Image (cartoon, rainbow, N blue to C red; front, side, top):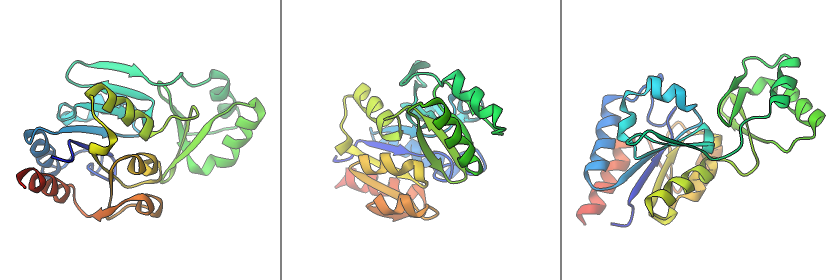
Length: 218
């Protein structure tokens, strides 16, 4: 078997209205039953996923907060992969009226409408901060932290290589991990940035699963 891992984005890729449809969940179970590993790679905060995602046990690892947090559902082990957000930065954003403003263990996120205020806050403090877009959202992360770096940590735990991974995503923040995976695939509703790095484009997760199953039978 060439590909041993399926790494998938959450919103816009396998999730609809914040939940995984039954057909997509069945597809993930098929991948697991074939002896492969499944990793969720998302910009969402872990606390939201643990509260809302009933199928979290389908994943060997969850890369949350766009690469900032690694979670293993089987053991409930959680690891921070970067430093927490700067209180000074959060205060500067609030002072400029940046709302909504969500703070995770590593990530800070808001609407992309606040781009100018965010840049002004970063410039004021002189901090080195990475800005990543996710459709209409904007995320602030430490330099070098993205979905690719988080996936690399998960693969290291599994003793596997990026050359054994099929990655599927749909948005700007998926660019790094689609490029990192040996086989990057964008779903049909993907933004142009994700389509630009994907080796293929497919409309439904089950179609990707069928390819993996067919490969295993070959």
